[in-house]
Length: 115
Image (cartoon, rainbow, N blue to C red; front, side, top):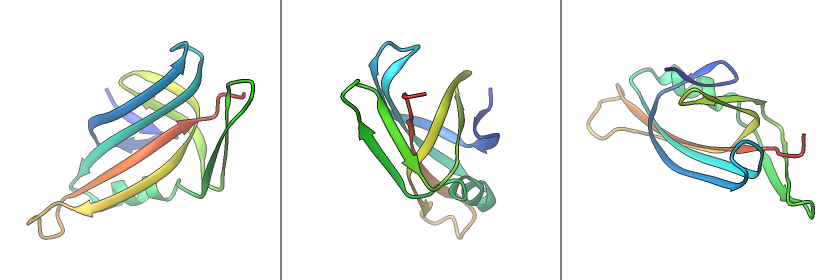
């Protein structure tokens, strides 16, 4: 099964944390932190190109409004599609002693639940 964001491949090695508030099918808040590993640096840069400044606002209706300067799209994770997702944060690091041949990146996705 392939994990993707807006049709860009994610090299997920671990779901670090998943926060769901409300019903699973229609959450009021959804956030997931993924740890990814790749031997291809362009996999990281392809996902990083979709990031921007992201602001998350909880509303009195208990929904979550997300504004961002990056891409909003579908996050497909373990066969489940989460619509209206944005990259809240992304960071990367070279894997120790890999001599620039392996990278680990962490990406946090958040879902706009107002739509």
